Amino acid sequence: MPAVAVIADAHFHDIEGDYDFAGISVNGRKLTVRTWADTAGSTRVFNESFAALKAALDRVVAKRVRHVVLLGDYTDDGQRETTASLVRLLAHYRALHGLSFYATPGNHDVFGPLGKHRDTRYVDSSGGTTLVTSDAGKAVADPGRPVVTPKMYCDGVPAGLEAMRDFGYYRQPGYLHWETPFGESDDPDRRQHDLVSADGQTVRRLMDASYLVEPEDGLWLLMIDANVFEPRNGRRDIARKKAFLDSSDAGWNALLRVKPYLLDWIADVAQRAKKQGKQLLAFSHYPAIDPFEDDTGSEMTLFGETNVAKRTPHRQVAETLATAGIALHFSGHLHVEASSRLDVAGRRFTNIAVPSLVAFPAGFVVVETADATPTVESVSLSGETLDTDLVSLYCAEHHHSDAEVDSALEANTYGDFLYRHMHSLTVRRYLPKEWPPEMAARVKGMSLWDFCLLMADGAAGTVDEQASAFGVNPALLRDSAMLDLVADWYSLRQSPAQAPGYISARKLACYRFLAQVYGDLHASAPHEPKGFFAIFLGVLGRSLERAARDGFSHKS
Image 1 (cartoon, rainbow, N blue to C red):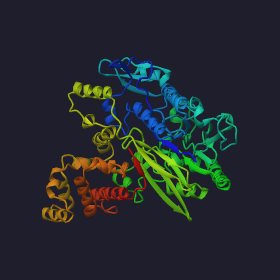
Image 2: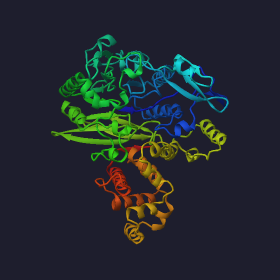
Image 3: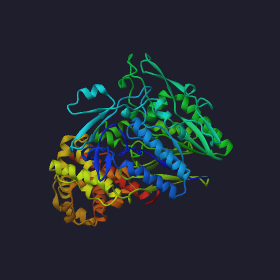
Image 4: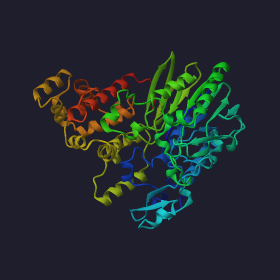
């Protein structure tokens, strides 16, 4: 049985592509790139996707894997030119190395039946930025010299899938078997389903991009289109993006309600796979189990309804898939590396959350299917080098603004760059946008010693005794910034397995001490500082426990 590589959230952007924009020239390269300021506050890095996807595919080739699943968000934002560049890249690897690709859509790749406008500010030759957009109306309101081009438009379904037709969405000559939930035809008109608004006033027809493919004898890849574009209540103009609820927060929770026909098909596929002795692997862009394993609702308690909280699948999702006969499912979307399991009526359901190529900790997974029980290996891109032209641009941007150069730009490897980016992300996004203002203000400028005094009600002697009992030198607490702990909290949450490799042993010892002594997932008064940080440390302890039990094997 062949191995399968699974790449999630590549968010590919062709920095050398033609977006009808002059861009900026660096060492003879015409680049269309975003600023470091954009990247520093984003949950993903933008420009680095150009090299990251190529690096991942080169690793796939080196490992002699021929089958590659693209687990959604394979494009930056579904722009026509971006999709066209991606198609050319995949076709190159297919022709040169014999790779076969099987895609499933993510929320960044297509939108509804008609698509929607996209716009981005790219660095221009003046050192500033220029708006490049498909929306002429938005360009009118821009004070600069915006570029209007259809190349920035994100197509809907099926137009947005047509360019990717050779990569699973449509039947190919070499497939041993291919079907959809509606039969064996790949005609988009025969793959339609109804989308009904909650109030029942609006019904839309849309192609479902799900399919089952058998690329080699005995291997079944179940590609599930978990995008849900639910019409909003009331009769709305279908041409407006506000006519549909955004698929980003919908995922499997909405799929159970809006696409019930998929569940019957999934159960039928699983039954046939068992009967015929096929190795069945299931894929969709969205997680089917909470990859953070937050069974106490800590995220909601601490920060309210964040994107993570809104996108967390309900337990019913995993129970439904397990009952349908699915044992192994791969997901992306949250840019997390994790393996989560749930036992339902004697059946074990496992969800493998595949990390993004453009967020910490960049990598992909390889599934070995030779045995009855597939094994999953995580392949890290941490050792990849950085694009020096991009780094020079970022440094020039800092110099132009008289800002202190971000430590991420001093990184020697891609992995270190992404780890340091988590610190920028914490300062620029998480603290100001998600944390309660009082708690965010407290962690700035606070040392771990100050933090311990807060948790120990000011009893310095008690802190000394507790730290010493855990083998932690109190002096290290005084020299360690609370802000570093917060950034590492997010890194450990994203990848319990790999994050410890970026944190010094002494700091990890401090974190274990804090989690064990002061952490409490069930602390009362979460709106008070001591209760809030007790839950925060409880989550830290859970991440550290997951690091110790993680089931991945890792390759750099």
